[in-house]
Amino acid sequence: MQFKKPLGGRKEPQLEQYALKNEEDLSARSSFANSINDSVNSGDGDPIQLHDPHQLEHPAPIPNENSLVRTKSTNDEPDVTTAPYSRFGPREKMILVVQCAFTGFFSSIASSIYYPVLTVIEKLFDISEESVNITVVVYFIFQGLSPSIMGGLADSLGRRPVVLFSVAVYFCACVGLACAQTYPQIIVLRCLQAAGISPVIAINSGIMGDVTTRAERGGYVGYVSGFQVLGNSFGALIGAGISSTWSWRAIFWFLAIGSGICLLASFIVLPETKRTIAGNGSIIPKSRFNRSPSLLFPPLRKRLHLDNPDLETLEPKVKISFLAPLGILKIPEVDIVLLVAGLQYAQMTTHQTALSTVLSKKYHLTVAKIGLCYLPTGICTLISVVTSGRYLNWSYRRKIIKHRQWKKEQETILLEEYNNDMEQVKEIMDNDPKYVFNIFKARIQPAFGTLILSGLGFCAYGWCISVKAPLAAVLVTSGFGSLFSNCILTMSTTLAVDLFPSKAATATSCLNLFRCSLAAIFIACLSKMVDRMTYGGVFTFLAALTTSSSLLLLIPVSRGKELALKRRQQENSLLQKKPTPEKHFSV
Image (cartoon, rainbow, N blue to C red; front, side):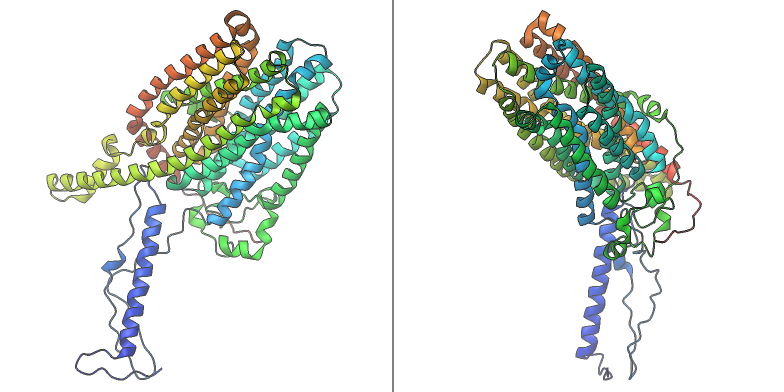
């Protein structure tokens, strides 16, 4: 390509095109650097600033007759090679959402799919209503205890092997339940069923924490929670349809077949996302148990940069500790959030358990019709979880932008006060809670309204079934209460992952422990409470309990900055202990 020598300082068309191309290249670098700044957050949500690409001097090469030579600027080049937080793009993240939702679906459906046949089991094995409720109670007990143990394993050994083991145990338990002949067998196998699959929900939150930043986490957690809740919401409808067509045993054969397919899909598709093992997704795990066959797929290898891994994104390994949840439970502000979320979940599950019994004994509906009556609850719950996740994303972005603007103004004031000593100002702002972004307020402040509305809905529901109101009134109040009931669960799950990114599965298992333990207590006491208080009194009590508990959230919201600063310092100190680079494994 030939260039004419410029005359009179005027650029020839070719040089003008080159200058324009140079500016476009610089603009692209600027856009890329800004995208990194937006996605890489420090502990309080502020971006780690890269060099400003516009500080570069435009190169002014003198072309010769044969080629165009670009000289190097005297300024440093911008660091646009910083590895992204995650190599998983939007498409890969949505595949992970579907995979996590698929496995989580079988955890949530196992409890609700059983509700329509409670009276069938009661008559078949000649047991009391209280005894048949025990089969629900033991499920919730082990659903609360198991993640506390398995969550720690997932944070140390990796997500993939623990998920595969959990689904395999669940599959075996479902086959056993389908063949059970006695009441004690059902009790034991329900315990095994819950112990097997329940860790998956906590691990799913850990997977989302591994591949998402704070700004997008609420939406992805909302999607996963929403599809998981499909099982809890529509399980009763599915169970009623299956049992009325075949028998109650067909319910567990359905779960066995579904979980078998899920196990096969997880083995093939689910990659290891734990950042101590796979970094940002570009590092192939050393252990064969953590390696997914999908990594052999050439397009995926290219997208994840498996042939050129970002070894600097590998985080320090977490030691196996079965007492890890105790460290999280020592924080009073976190316990308050978990308690409020647990009470709300317990109210929701108590309402579902009571609905099956009331529709069968008071309204004399068939099993199929009982299943249909769970449809309003299911639809409203799904809307609740998905919209709350999207709202969290919108709310977080709005509040973090406002916080950054305020922090910039404060930085200017401090610079004037300390004679433009940037290091001293930075030290002050990094160690003073006043300048920390209040993640508690951003995540759980909207919960106040939802808890009150949900309590009002379930209170009305209790009195409707107590006086045997028209069925439409029962279903409307049930749906209204469910519409706002799961918002706090999405908010608390997202907050747990935000506060403990390196122990996301363990943190979520603590939430699971609270909600399942409280649900087990309420359901175990339901029959005796109804005998003394009627359904109206029971749900008025539960609504008052959950609504008044929302006032406790004022404590973490008001002290959120101090706790957020403490957690940021702990996480930073952990991340500063860089692991020794290991030999990269190739497949």
